[in-house]
Length: 287
Image (tube, rainbow, N blue to C red; front, side, top):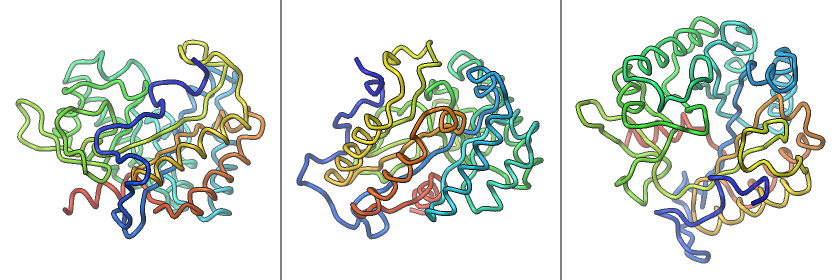
């Protein structure tokens, strides 16, 4: 298994069409959707680069790039990062990007916590981000590669959040556009959960040795080829494609800046609706 062959491996998920069965116009008049997700997490930068300030420097540089290519991103921010670097979160919101939570401390995984502890985490991360930038987040992108359980969804619903990006629950509509309502046992309030045809990819670093699929160093050429291929598949199947990048990895991975620029341009060429998770959730919520 190579570095790109993780649990995001390209495969036909429920709701995807086979190549040639694209349904034009489903995504706000476009054949497929593209979301760039940016995980802003200074603790991970400190762990793998030795300096938490790497995240600040790299996030500012990424915001400049996004302004240059005219792209709004969905920025998943750690609560503790918002507390330590509130100016970065303000820059993100002032630039018009979507902001969502990414847990308070990035550990442990939500699936290892009780319902009460998960509610506390959702609440604290929301408060930290609101204190930093004045924006009340409506969603959470789960850390630890989306390791969640039903209690994670229940906790988010009970805390008043609209959507959560985690492990995909079973039984949701196969033709949903990004999200669908999900109600857990014992919780009357539904929450939007991932649904429908989805493809994804993420940058990677061999410095993260605990990632089981990291068996080779970062390769700009390899990432460019693979990410473009997955975008092509999303265009063919009418799926949502999301790319996850990490500022600290952009800082240390040779050539990743140009790869991000190139794949966004490729998505545009293929006719993608360039959107955010916030927009997708609002569309699902409003029917």
